View (spheres, rainbow, N blue to C red):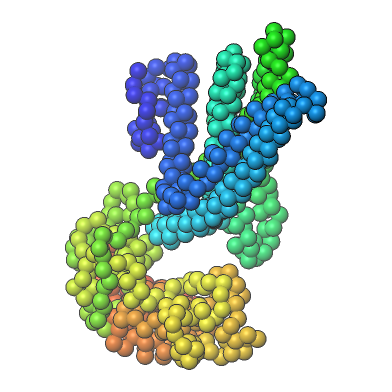
Length: 634
């Protein structure tokens, strides 16, 4: 029999499951392996979530000690309460109230009951106040940690993830932590103390009673745990997966509502969502049904345990081994213990549910960032803006063939360079590598002689201004969006940048001017207006390196002329890279680099490249000129 304790990653990499089943074909072996695999996965989830929680507990050791100590002492008060209840009954039943001895015994028992109750209230209140602070700080910390990691995940990770699903994982995990803390510290810990304490106390007076309570309680907890973790948990995990997909589908459709309306596809999107909801409903129903079966089983077991305890108490009374107060002590102890036991089933289900809900959030901690700063990486200092690719080889993910192989190019300080070529030729990758959105496989990329892989990413990107072809704006004011590259910019500087980008006039005509909120991703502005805001942001950044991804493609003709003039001023003295889609915009640049399949196949000015017979640039330019001519004729 092979070693079955393998990780999920090893399982996928080795294809172990398929290989083993193909080799044997035995049904029992299949079932055994699947069961062991599921157990390992559940154990792995519990270990990772509880380990994650323990790390955050250790950040507040004194608060955690206060909570645990207070709950332990308050639960011990509950353990002793039935004992003094029995003594009170014995005192009352032994004689009339006129009997001084009986009266004193009754008053003593009554005083202890009041003292125990008061101690329980005070201690629980202290514990609850402490756990409020503990949980709120933990929730804030894990939200901040998750956001920190999500912000730094690779470009590919964000491209392959639903924003709505990511938000859902974080918020669901935060509130699951609240439930997990309550379950372990408020519920399970006192329940265990109550169970052990009551069993020992009953066993001290009647060993047989202690044995019945101990065996029945342990059996109840074992069966409850097996049902919750082995029967309910797998269904809950699958239900959570579909809950995440439901959130992602909703966010996807809502964020693309303009496209939905544009194609009159509301009914189609509703149908698509209905299919996801149907799957979510089926998976959630199965989880709830299994939870109901679990609860019914627990109720049946508690009924059997109650019958055994009460029956044994009556037998002890009939045998003369227990007084009326002793019977009251046993019954009170059992009913208090039964409340804890009944809740243990709920607590285990809550523990299972909270771990299921936190699992995806905890997985963020094991998710590789993709691009990480080296230990001790310092800021980059960009002065001249020279960019050098030195024998660079670069693979996209697991692609077998590299996009760039032994690729070298040098861009002089202040040079204005156009990047030209077919889609997929490597233009966009070129600028992404300069921003270090990806790491090269071999070779180095230097800016002013500094290896960009050895400096802090935030410092590098903070000194490169970029205007994207499809600008993305925050749902914030226009002033905040323009000043995003320089948050401390004055209002005068913001307005000056907007004027340079021909954006000031349309902003000034808005009801709230620069305080106008632009909507999610800038949806309240036209494409040209969004582009001009993004260009104003680049003006304000005033970086030595400027990247323009066809920055004027969304502008009307009048604005384009103004922006082209402003761009000429902006590019003076700055190293500028222009990803060219319309070749008419790069004719005045100092140098053009023509890419084809990750190689620079042509290089020179517009006038030089247009003279190359059969050249790629000339062919692209003539094709666009022909299309423009046809458009004018029509």
